[in-house]
Length: 210
Image 1: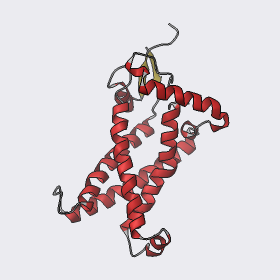
Image 2: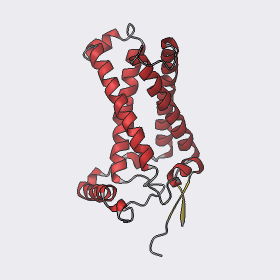
Image 3: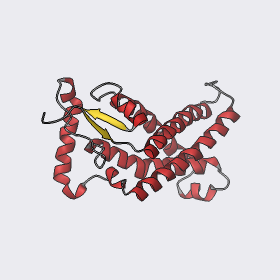
């Protein structure tokens, strides 16, 4: 087995902190939106917890950005579109593996390294999330946090229905993403390998060419 140190301690701390924030935001957001249908906690408590962990998520995002910029590792998130043909071919191979190869015992075409952690499909997904979707979720959340203070910005964005609608759609996306993400973590050489690696930093995979 090859043992690789893939996830530095700051990344692991941010990952689990981010997970906790998302989980609590989804639960409290559902309580706020479906007031009277759900009865998990009081409406006031749900709002307070939602606001608290919303700002915590924004702080975590800032930490993520500063760490990856300072460490010079932000490139692991950026697709190699300068070699578009090669990138698309690698993405096709990865999609074929997920859709068929994994069920017949084929090897994963992507082999993670510290400087190339994500396969092409993961890379484009994480790039979209971290550079566009998560910032949009944070911005719409801040606008909804104080409707009076940001009334002018909300009007420029198309009104409260547009802002809240975008926030809801992004919430549905992130909820679905979490489910898919958890499933994909079970696709290592053992079902818990990827999850264990996010605690220890080290990931094992079968050696190649042996």
